[in-house]
Length: 187
Image 1 (cartoon, rainbow, N blue to C red):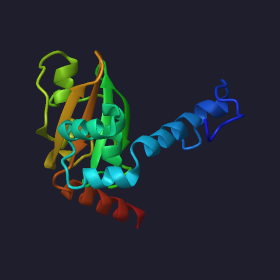
Image 2: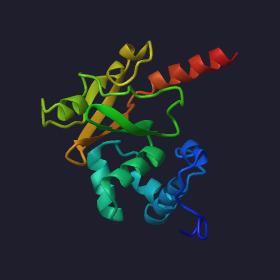
Image 3: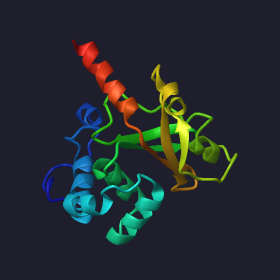
């Protein structure tokens, strides 16, 4: 409201659809404003420093800041001390994801959680067990070398049909290798 007061918020135009996921989107700006207000970067970063990127950490921080698990998980991915990604899936399909600043933009999670993931087990009713567990990175990423790496997965239901997954690289070698590959391709 502070940023877009007096402007038409919702209109069905090509421009609105094209900017839906951009920084120009009023909803994205409102979410960012709310995050800064409720989870101030300096206060949040200090409390998240050197903590594992798992839902136990998210729950602790959500209790401190009195915020939702989803908003707190996004903030932990953005300002935690380790490379991480948050993925939201329902009915076996990825709905959205947020990567942390240390995760290369070339690394995208699969369109659906793989059968060797906790998220897949939860969504298919095969298990109610939750993480955190180490899984092979190729269960989440289709990169040709993903099978050489592991990622820590922690998945939980946030609604009856939606699972949130935190992916955390304890060992950053995969991300270093990806960054080096990207640099080699640019040259």
